[in-house]
Amino acid sequence: MVHSALANSSAPIGYRGRFAPSPTGPLHFGSLVAAVGSYLDARANGGEWLVRIEDVDTPRSVPGAAALILRTLDDLGFEWNGEVLVQSRRLDLYHAALVDLQLAGEAYPCACSRSEIAAATSKKSVDGGLLYPGTCRTGLADGKAARAWRLRVPDREFVLEDRVQGKTRQNLEREVGDFVLLRADGQYAYQLAVVVDDAAQDVNAIVRGVDLLDSTVRQMWLQQRLGLPTPSYAHLPVVVNAQGEKLSKQTKAAAVDPSQGSSILASAMQFLGHPVPTDIRHGPVADFWRWAISAWSIERIPSVKGIYPGPCVPP
Ligand SMILES: [Zn+2]
Image (cartoon, rainbow, N blue to C red; front, side, top):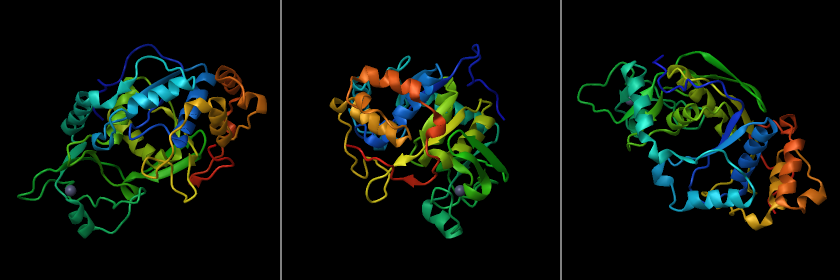
């Protein structure tokens, strides 16, 4: 483990959650569900709710999308605490964390191209890619130059106690492999940025889509190596389209229309296992939030790990 300069030393805080959209397009129904779930869980627990723009993957970011997402949230009556944090302005912090891990020998340079990894292994990792065979773990081969930096992972089982999905077990070495922190294209990996930012913002309760469940143990390991606390996790079912694909810009998900007000919020809440009374569905947004915060119960969220078409589709 490295020193904990990244950890905050302020007084203990109450619940602090966050919503962290990627600005790859306008807010769609799938990301609205994550926003509603994280917001209600924070407010029902008397907590704070932060918004962070996760644009560390700069090639995928769309100019103007972040502002559009924030406007949609605001129009739908979401109230966030503090300033909106933008990852692309925080690269120095990710760099500092990487240097800590490099100096501690936790991170090592990797010279392998994708085709070299494919030639060395056919084993798949949990996220469907190839499981890195550890070629550069003990040093670069002669004449090879570093392309990326990877984090060493241990051959042991981790247990994640998820508030919605229950227990999840994962062996990092056997199911994930040493994973990338700094990519060959010079971009910091999502895993590093999200861990650094959650700690910097004192986020202690994470509510997000179940598509990120498999990467959580990687984040827990990074937290341990950086001397940072591990938040609680709740992974929500994700919305899929008629083809069974997760809603995203790539699957051409429609933008949320904020003029739908309570009715679109009610659809998101219904997707999360909370039926909404008709008068609330058709009433003002302020009334919806008042009712929803008191009605919220995380136990009612369907605990499905895969895709979840849901009892309700966006209007
Ligand atoms: Zn390598």
